[in-house]
Length: 245
Image 1 (tube, rainbow, N blue to C red):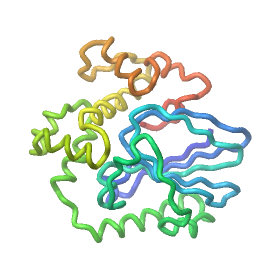
Image 2 (cartoon, helix red, strand yellow):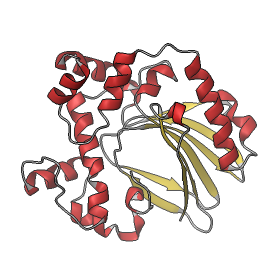
Image 3 (tube, rainbow, N blue to C red):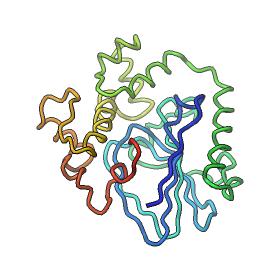
């Protein structure tokens, strides 16, 4: 497995989770990606030439990806705030789906000859330029960074951000296509992946009991914690790389 991940510069940390690249050298690769609370701009390269670009929405269920031999995939993993201030759009319409874009979106075609690290620097500059031109709503920024805190419920988020619970839920459904409760459940479960990797199959994350945790795990991943830990044939990408999900 040839997987590389690069953290964003500080000025992008509220908008970008990471930049990543995955290369398939000698064989076709099949993986399952689990919900992680982010959406992505994905670039597919064949023989070092950019052939397709698409926006992949938030996920509420696992999805399978196939990387053919000799193909590399790189992506920008975006946090919620980016939907409005980088893409100027809602992403509710692409929940659990993708939106094909022009291969030269953001002039990406002009960067396809660059190594991943250099391409990341150039894309980072472009994103920073977009953000500098925007006036960021501080209330929204507080809300959309707070919701990535593991183990918060909607009431606690409302108390921290001074948003009414109904207002939070309306905004999430309209902008992202899912309820705030569902999103927080995904973040809580995502935060348990590191514990599962270490062999702890019932993390201390305010689940009612172990049965509740197993039920939630199956709901969003399709499998039990035990099967995630086993990770046969490196099926689950988040459990096959030495990175936090």
